[in-house]
Length: 141
Image (tube, rainbow, N blue to C red; front, side, top):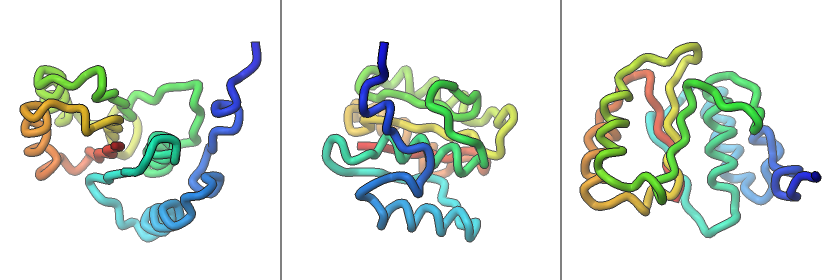
């Protein structure tokens, strides 16, 4: 069985992302300069590459090669459309203090973050404001 076109041609690095040069250039320059933020917010309409950029950014921040077929232990992707309740965020808050297993940063990609309940987002807010030094959040909405 063949691969879907969006999987076949999905970019593997920031330089391969098409149509978002202003974003990818800014992120690449920040990584080169060592000016890493503790949180990133990627917004835009459906299909512009928010989740793809988030995954690539997570790997590049940790100096890892991006391979969409493998999951990395220190890159945690959460679908907030399915995991939108306060219990999931409390679990994240409890685990965020655990150091990365083998990478420099433990990176949390929260996709569809706008789907979190009000209570869940309020619970996440404290961690976003004062994260541990080893944690980076990438929010896509």
